[in-house]
Length: 80
Image: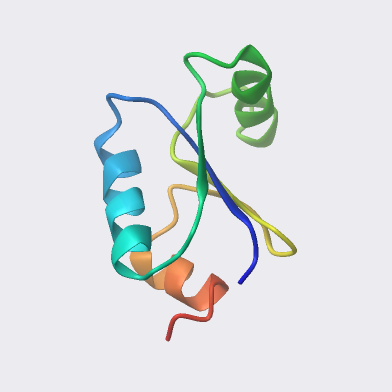
């Protein structure tokens, strides 16, 4: 399984939904709160055209995805 990193905020419902999906799917991941990590916020802004859009999910060897659907995550992580 590739390493997965979720850039998120505490208040983001889409972030919590993505985490629940990954938890139910048995995927191990790291979370990074961009409100507490300025370098992470800068990374998110760089990959999202200057926006702090979350969840931004980095999947080792696959790329970085902004608010991917469950279907897209399933395909990227070979869950289906």
